[in-house]
Length: 136
Image (cartoon, rainbow, N blue to C red; front, side, top):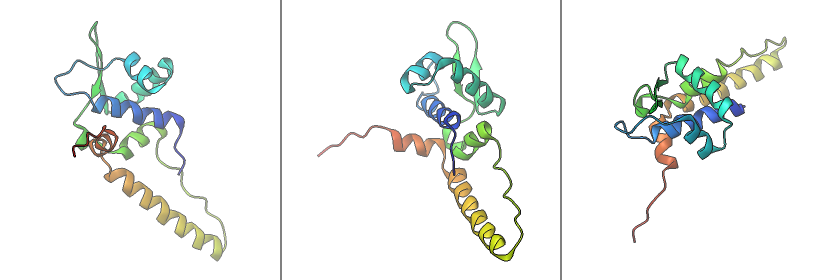
């Protein structure tokens, strides 16, 4: 599986938004860009794609910015990747028994990858990335 830089930036932006409590003001593009080293102009395009896919909402005005469109536990990593990179291309149809056997294995691999991405929620991913406080 290949993840584009754009898709990775989208995931980082979604994780940043997931870290904001619902009562907090919307997160500004500049804050996300600076925290994750994403060029602001590129992030604008990414957030517009995520908005078009219904994953984020924008809030206008002086205190505006972006928020998740729904709770992080109801949004999957697979949705974010699909919103940015679109569906995976269809596998090549090569002639021959050996090629068909390989194609069957590649399809199984793609299905397993998709299953992991679709069952991994943004909330789970956020939990994995949260700093840990150790008490001994």
